[in-house]
Amino acid sequence: MTITSETTVGAVATEYPLATRVFARHGIDFCCGGGRPLGDICAEKGIEVEQMLAEIESEITQADAPEVRWDEEPIPALIEHILGTYHAPHKEELPRLEAMARKVNQVHGAKDPQRLQALEDTVIALRADLEQHMMKEEQILFPMIASGRGGMAGGPISVMEMEHDEAGAMLRRLRELTEDYQVPDGACNTWRALWVGLEDLERALHEHIHLENNILFPLALSE
Image (cartoon, rainbow, N blue to C red; front, side, top):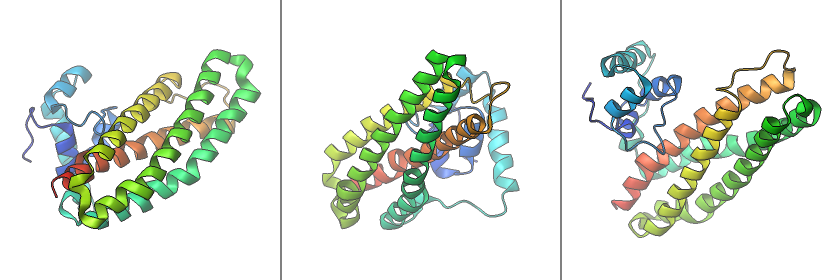
């Protein structure tokens, strides 16, 4: 592998897509924080760079088939992948997660009122922001890029990147509120499903934002 301690985590995720599994296991932000060197991230996490590289190589060698290198695919194909793999599922999952967050707070709020109310509020805000964000991408930015006018999309892309940062902050808040998605003792099935669903959303959003911040947007601006 052509990875060193100076390689950014976004570049690693782009060149070796299966590395995102390793980053997810270690709670490494490879989307909004994709511009940071791997060595700095490993130092913060208390992990040797060599160990991280060994884990990435293990994921690659054990894979049944190589992952798609989206930086080598046509831009329209990447956009269609983002829409089908992330936008559509997010639109289905976000209302379900909000309903569960409301129910858990309504039924169990007395057990931890401050935390469960903050969690409900964060899920509601994240859903509202993401739905508005995806609508702007689908109606304005993606058609602009797909038509070959990505080089003129610097303004809209900057706005989308700012909104990605805001979504990333809410994901970090949810992880804090759920104590890294450790299900509390005695949690009901809905509570458990909410924790699992939010952690799955975090993983999907990290991949989603990575594809846009680190691949789609640079490709579009280079046109």
